[in-house]
Image (cartoon, rainbow, N blue to C red; front, side):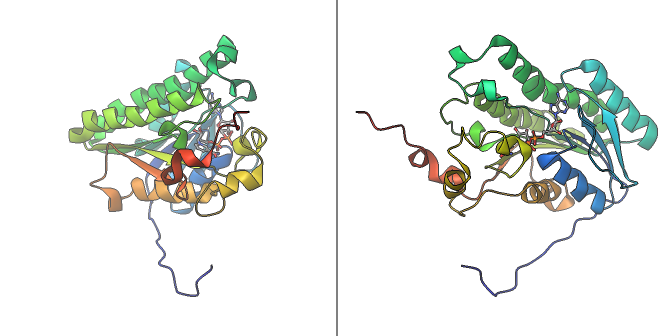
Length: 266
Ligand SMILES: NC(=O)c1ccc[n+]([C@@H]2O[C@H](COP(=O)([O-])OP(=O)(O)OC[C@H]3O[C@@H](n4cnc5c(N)ncnc54)[C@H](O)[C@@H]3O)[C@@H](O)[C@H]2O)c1
């Protein structure tokens, strides 16, 4: 299947840009942090967990639980006082605990409430903290990391999926609201990506082979492939792109409902 034809390559420049990535200590967020840092940006990781290794001088870590208004305010204040600007916010921190893989009447309230606090309100909290600064600058980009499950559902993601849909609509809403302030807001919707989150739920997804096979490309994605999409969307090459969603999913969404059949009725 591999072709010997040359493929085009791109390089993004992010010198002097200031970027906040929530949930940037591992998985997709970590790849987004590395991609921005390698292209010259000053990056602030806002995460409940410290990154395992961070040797890059232009990456700093602020402990932040995005469910806490105080923590979100502190990260944004730190970014402004140490760098003077905020050019990009990537809302990426989200949770999908094992106990949430049930129809909603089987999900404890404490679990779904925490998912709402982090996955929905966390995105709103961080955006409302950075948008006044971006308005003052008359520039900025906000990216909400959503999911393929924002667009079409599967069984037992009754909490996660609807909140991911809301992340897409947050981006559309904020995108139209702030377009004339020079601010673009977008969402990206990954298919299955090889991260700790997906590895923790392989059984629920039918195992790694079945999960890979569900993607027309024949494999799951890498965190780098999502980071590449984010770098494009936040660059001047996407300057007329706002208030919309980009699916980064190896064709998963196009395959749709036929990919995940119900068990046979006896
Ligand atoms: N991995 C996938 O297949 C996949 C597919 C579609 C969408 N997504 C989305 O991509 C994003 C990243 O997913 P991932 O797979 O890299 O997850 P992950 O679990 O591997 O990493 C998530 C990171 O967020 C941090 N985090 C968790 N709760 C937090 C909180 N309250 N405040 C701050 N940080 C917090 C964690 O410490 C961790 O560093 C999420 O929004 C997820 O819903 C992932």
